[in-house]
Amino acid sequence: MSNEKRNALGKGLSALLNDTPSVLPNKNNEARQSVPRPVSEVDSLGSINEIKISEIEVNPFQPRTEFDEQALADLSASIKLQGLIQPITVRKMSAHAYQLISGERRLRASKLAGLTQIPAYIRTANDQQMLEMALIENIQRENLNAIEVALSFQRMIDECSLKQEELGDRVSKNRSTVTNYLRLLKLPPSIQASLRDNEISMGHAKALLAVEDPAAQLYIHQQIIKNELSVRKAEELVREIQKAPVKKEGKQPEELSYQLKKVQDDLASKFSTKVRLKVNSQGNGSIEIPFLSEDDLGRILEMLDW
Image (cartoon, rainbow, N blue to C red; front, side, top):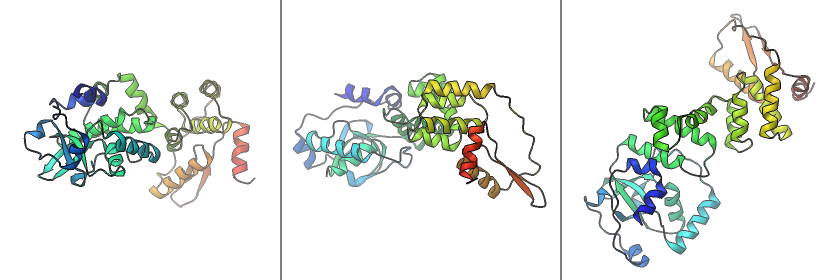
């Protein structure tokens, strides 16, 4: 049974957990739910232990903040019927205090099921190891969207001091796959949100990444949503845009303040195109809203109630 559990965690996570778990002697579920077995220092080396849910605090490094309520309810119903099959992983903080390393979804569902204690692997891990283990478990979820994966990859690089090759080894993905996910974070925020909310696919995002100009990216994204373009149609639109001559922009005469930059970004999101504010030292200036076609101009004018 321990091999099945370790395989379920994935190669990347199991590689971090150097000790091999040993399973408690077979007991019926009622006995396991009644009285928790005392946890000794030897237990901390990796056996499965029953610990009180009230003694577990949530992992502060958990990268996932949203959980599907229906999925939690379904898992809770399964736990009520069959018990928790896959233990959570915690680290021991003191005699009666533990911090969650991985398994927050299972912990939440167990609380919903009315359990007062839960089977757990007890590990020793520093903060960086905790973050890395939580991120790896998070990345290995099948229902994780592309932006969540990209953000987790970026956190592992920034906070765990990993190179892309090392990150690929941790999550069993090649470097090109890691790079493709990280590139998503260079897209405008509105496009990232659309990808996060499954309004566009990873294929659409890759097509948009072939365009360097953010204004063109925003325009193509708007056309994908408006016309429900397939990935192939989006790629065709990208090729058409790339054939059009691009006018090079000069430098802004004055550096914008933080407040004006925010206004500029808000306008860009509103019009789904790259808006440019020009302000001189006297406070005078102008707003430029570029358009990529007559249809795009019509869209902008309609938004302005022209």
